[in-house]
Image (cartoon, rainbow, N blue to C red; front, side):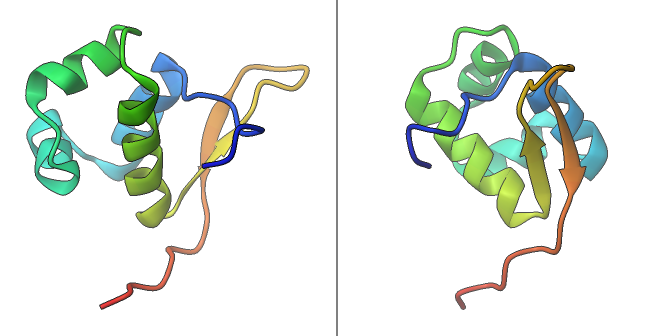
Length: 85
């Protein structure tokens, strides 16, 4: 993620999880992040590295993050990225 992209908001994390139907245990399995780390992300106290990890996993699953630009930040689906395996 380059420095021009905004950091994920708490709302975007929650929207992405809901859109994908992912629970914190599912997200923990996919990212390798501990549940406490995920809780911090949803409480707005995550590190930039955690947010980058979450963003990458959500984007891999087909979520695009819409920055706040005259309206609220949000998410939408895109074509999932091709698997490298």
